[in-house]
Amino acid sequence: MSPIEVSSPARIAVTLLDLNGELGRVDGTIGFAIDSPRVVVRVSGHHQAPTAVPDEQVPALREGISLASKFGVDAREAVVELVQTIPPHVGLGHKTQTALAVALGLLRYFDREVNVAQIARESGRGGTSGVGSYTFQHGGIVVDAGHRFGPDGKTGFLPSSAARTAGLPPLIGRFTPSDELSLVLIRPLGMQGASGDSERAFFSRNCPVSRESADRVIADCYMRLLPGLLEGDVAQVSDSINTMQEGDFKSAVWNSYDERLGRLRRLALDSGLPNLGMSSLGPSLFSVIRSGSLASARAIIMKASHAADLPVAITDSQFAAHGARIKVVGDSGL
Image (cartoon, rainbow, N blue to C red; front, top):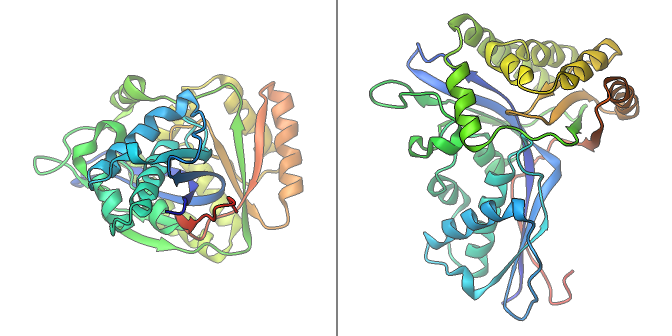
């Protein structure tokens, strides 16, 4: 059998929409797939020498192998390699994208006819945000409807990793952003976001948010951010992203980090960067800019980074139009 490669984009989770729950639903997310970074998984036979997997990527790899086993695949009969990886615990969805890519690669290698939607549903992912699963499937911009809240649904505020029984939320829509827009991704070096027990504790401390805050985030999503992304209106997108950072939950996320991160944001905005948001629980930051203005955006961010004494890695990225892609690799590896 020829080796199989699965390539999947990282994702930006712009924000959770409703962490109040008084309307009978909770969560809901808007986010989008980005071209870089991405995870690339290769599945081949035992004639290929396996490569070492970084320790921080092992849990996601094991989750993908376990997921494939639910469809009757024994990963011991293949070699799974992580050719490219998404940094873990920085708000870019590394575990969801990696686990789904590993499972999909194994299933295709062994000719199992299971579609991507089935794999995503079976994964147990999406108990809070569906952005990771839906960008894996579709790419582009995605908005999900969140979950029922109350006796017939979720009864607490939890991150996806602790809400596996909630299931994948309904997809409201998948949209294509204007080709007039580009992205800059900023990853603060030496910082990681909350995970595991600390992530659950963060939700417990900061939820529920006020009804007023949730309503504002929802209005910003549907009346400014989404239309702005579709029409290429940077001013509208910027107003929305910047306002969302001041909401009850997102401001708590910012305040959970070293003050240098908030200082970098203020300096960058004051110097002319149109917007700066945080993906998920961070610390990765993103800015939606007009295509052709990448050089000036990078210069502003670098200047702010130096002034805030916070080293960062800057990536010029794009919206990813497609989700996971599969290809058969020739014996030469090409």
